[in-house]
Image 1 (cartoon, rainbow, N blue to C red):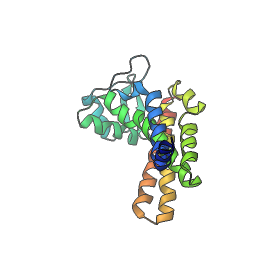
Image 2 (image 1 turned 45 degrees about the vertical axis):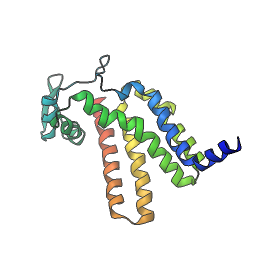
Image 3 (image 1 turned 90 degrees about the vertical axis):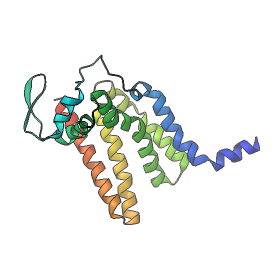
Image 4 (image 1 turned 120 degrees about the vertical axis):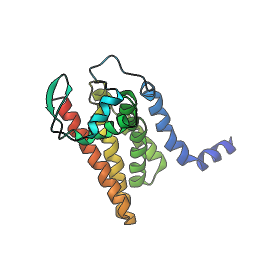
Length: 196
């Protein structure tokens, strides 16, 4: 028993870091596959149609045959379009761009941020659980506001990188932080436009 306790203390960081990730993978196990979600109003594009999103345009007829402004949506659509250009359909692109960051980046980023602030592995473990599985995100995910949850994952990771950049005085961390917060904003704006 003493050896087990010593082993746990020795590997406390890894246990506290990987447990929220595994719990997140268990909670969102359906999102890990490349299956097509069939029971919702989420759009579906094949790779040929998806890669058209790379090229910027002011108008598009992608949504229900009516023209919509795409200027605010362009960065998000460009992310999806890159996967279409690589030959992947919407079911792969949306998992990598939207759903997998919720599953993986949410517990990782919250763990790292709370650990940076508290300097405690166990505190970071609790913070990752509370942030990743709070009722707000669980409730809005069932209402189709997935992009807001993904924005939170990118935003928290960007905030952690900003703190690290301020401590280390590394330019690349500042740029990476800026890009992550930019993508968080893009996801928020796109989610707001989609549901307005």
